[in-house]
Image (cartoon, rainbow, N blue to C red; front, top):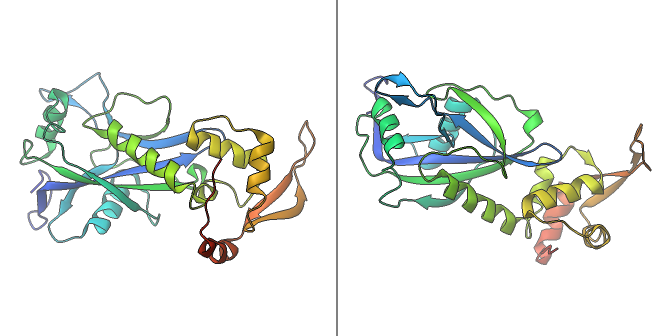
Length: 252
């Protein structure tokens, strides 16, 4: 049972969930991290250690429910789709000195071996308000290419989530979840470049993406821009679900 919790709530000391939440700001791919409030000898440490939103599961809940609860408790995010992508259980994942010191301040069995089940999600960062709570002192969006010091094996978890994101972007138009309802091909290309971490040829990208029947051109174009206005497009979910039965594969 965790310290500070009511006696009737029992936690499994050996199983946790961690959530990798990706967001896109129109230019860069971000990941949501929390400041866990590191303490050394009962005093706040000047060194901040950031972690993914995560915690132990309760004995009476399944993994999916635990992931949703933990994310809500630590960041205020709720009602977003979470997909399980892997588990992490290396014997040394909780043995770093600063990690053990923090665990001793919040857990009844800080040295217990913990296997974590990881989830990830894609959201538009500007559509959600983040409210740090619980043991999370603050919550931040960090550039995926400019990460702070992370606790535990959370860098490895993020890298595996990013690998999964890159892979699935070839089979599912996941990136559209990170764009406004209407967007330009330039915005779409920036998103793919952020996910794939590579610069794409503009002509080749547009030739391939425009073959997708679920990408619908609108009559509306940009206004008030210093360059030639670009046409807006939207994503037809119904068309995609019909189209994907034809073995959709998108390669750049």
